[in-house]
Amino acid sequence: MTDRLPVEAQLRSLDHKKLAAYCAAMTERQFPNFVLFSKLTEFGDIKQLETVLDGVWQSLVPGGAKMNFEVQLDKVDANMPNLDEYEMYGASPALDAVVSLYSTLTCILEADVDEAIAVGNVSRECVAMFIEISEGDDQMSDEEIIRLINNHDLMIQEDEFHEEVVERLVKVKQLDKAFISELRSLASNQGVSNIGISDEDA
Image 1 (tube, helix red, strand yellow):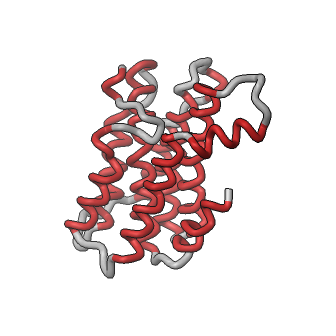
Image 2: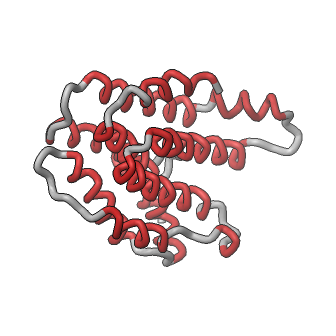
Image 3: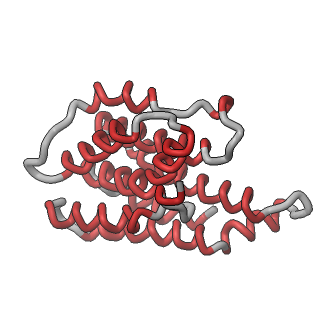
C-alpha cells in the first residue's frame, strides 16, 4: 500500500481550493456508479446530486457561483443507499460515490486534508472490492488477492488517475476556468467510472 504515500504527501501540500478540486475529481469519476444504481433501483435523486456536484465545480472557479454547502449536506445524506436493504453489489459503489460527495462538501467547509485523503481512499477501495468480487475466488490466498488487485488494469488506471490529478494541482499556480474545465473532463472519463461502468449500462 506504499504506492499511496506520495499522493498523500502531495495532498498535504495543497491549499484549501486545490484539496476541494481533488475531492471533486475523485467524486466525478465515481458518480456514474450512483447514477447506474439509481436508474436500476429507482432509488435517490440523480438530478439533486448532479446539481450539488455542479455547484462544487462552479465554486472552484474564480467568481463562480457559490452554493450553501452546509444546506446540501442533508440532501446528500438522504441519497445514501442503505446496504442492508439491497442484495445487489451495485449498492456499495453507489454508496461510495455519495459518501465521496459528502466528504467533498465537508472538505470545502472545513478545509480538512484528511477528508480529501479519505475521498481518495474510498475511490481506491471501491476499485479493490470490485476486482475482488468480480475476479477473486475463495481458493485464493490473501497474498494472491492483493497481487490480483494491485496488478489489475482497473487499479493501475485508478492510481494513474490519482497521480495525474495531484500532479496537475501541484503544478498549477491558480485555479481558473480553463483548468477546472480540463480537470472535470479528465475526471468524467467520457462517462466511465472508476470500476469501468457507465450509466448507459442500465
